[in-house]
Length: 617
Ligand code: SAT
Ligand code: MN
Image (tube, rainbow, N blue to C red):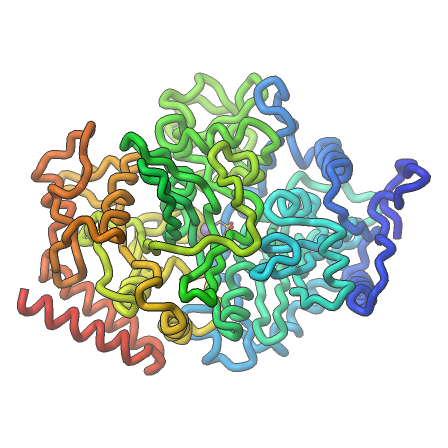
């Protein structure tokens, strides 16, 4: 069903028409699309080709319909502001389900629902759910099209906001369809905002539904999402596919889908190292991904800021790609003093969601500048002044921008084979206990560390901000199968690595506070000082101090030139209190016990060894 009223050029296919690509895979795709159209009853079907002209037409139409505000091109060319419904601002973990045949395979950390039961719920919801709207068919690739670590999928959606976001976050286009036509496996993802329009009914700026379901079928590699337009719930290529479904594919194929940033660190001699780091949402992955070292001579190149796929290579090293093509980053806290690279990345061609609007047609959020402007329109569209004492931007407001626009993106950031990892970092937001950096003694100890990450809640998901929660490998909301089996899979992947070529594992915590509530570590660019120590450890240039929880730096080995961290603060940053760590071990035991005996014995042994070391400490 053609979409457009515009006159197509005689030689190009009509806007939104299905491209003429032959092949058995294409026939299966067309059949699937027809089935979905019969179910959801859209007014039109649009095959997305990923072209610039198409993107511009979609953006223009959304502006005309009041779904986007075009920002002043003088300040922010090619950029737009979306304001979501106030109830649709973050991932809804309580409405996110893993529908595996077997409940045990979803594990206690996921919401499980039986596939037949949920299909019985979803089917009536999707019936006619796209009435009055266009159904877009978006073929996308995670990783460069045809790359050895890449995977492809198709999203069907009735949200043009999702289409333009997917266009930034993934590789969209006809070359993906050619892969499908040629028989490549692809993941099916279906999305509806759940807001059908009656004939003549006026649309709203952000259609969505109070009833939400984000459902994953790991046995058939499908995602069905209903009722939400928010990034993590609607850009299904991202968390739903590249983490939840991909973690299942990785389990079966021997690789890892991880919630990790990816960087190349270049030392003053020009030697390059690759570091991946897992932190929960809104704990500074984007900041570390775009790090500007404050120690002279060091450079960081960005490879990815949120997701990494890791695969053991023939050479015994662990190779990593960033499967995404853009950044969906948290705006608040991103500013000249915290992440100047991100600020520069956002010069234009950016879709902002739920940030504040300036009177001059540019955007603003808390932390962009030290002083707020005198007058703004807040994220809900209301007049705002600093005196009101509430944030102008939503704490989980976001920017969506192409990775290629980052001034320090690595030239080869989309190399199909990826990069070999030298170090893996696990971290979270911890006011107490966890030191600035601690090194694992070996891979198994590193997996133990990863399994124990806990972090104070942020605004990236619904829930009480600040509350401590276990977030193993920063994958709590993103692991598509039983988390204990996933720990075991990490151990298995380690066995495929050559012991002297496996990445070294570290735990970091930029957020430790003193008794007075003050952050003990300056963070941001000064985190390069921690990275410097990590690399000197890898090179065997500095000794470490054994502690019950792992290897700590001697504080004199940290390069602190040019910053002033009092010795007392340094001591506090690395203080290991056996009593509170024994309590952490108790919590780990309690956490492990929720897995019905599925936690690998090697990790139980690590826990016992930790307890022993704490006792004799
Ligand atoms: O899940 S999102 O992709 O919306 C962002 C995040 O929580 O990391
Ligand atoms: Mn994330």
